[in-house]
Amino acid sequence: MSAEQPIERVVDGETFRISQDPDLPGQYHFDWLSGPNPDYGFSSRASGGGQQSEAELDEGIRAFLARVDPETGYIE
Image (cartoon, rainbow, N blue to C red; front, side, top):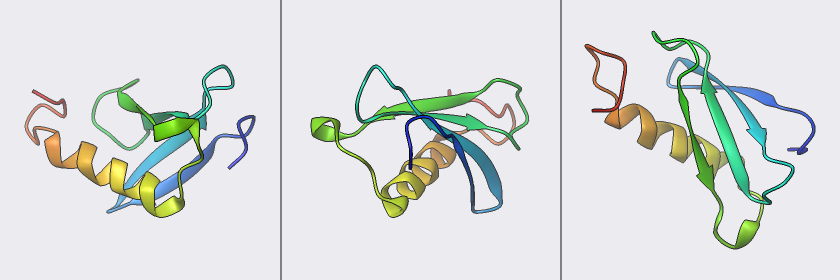
């Protein structure tokens, strides 16, 4: 994944746009495009500033979704 080009991934039926922060190597921003709340998502940082694999990106998304309250669409 290029730091300049965000990608979209569908994980467990939910769509996220993932971008890397050009100023912080290993920092990823996840915008939850199919979620109930506009402009909601999360960020994560890879240990040592390295690239994350697709499996690691998906794992981060699944961990985020597991914490979301299904009634509010937010993490409590």
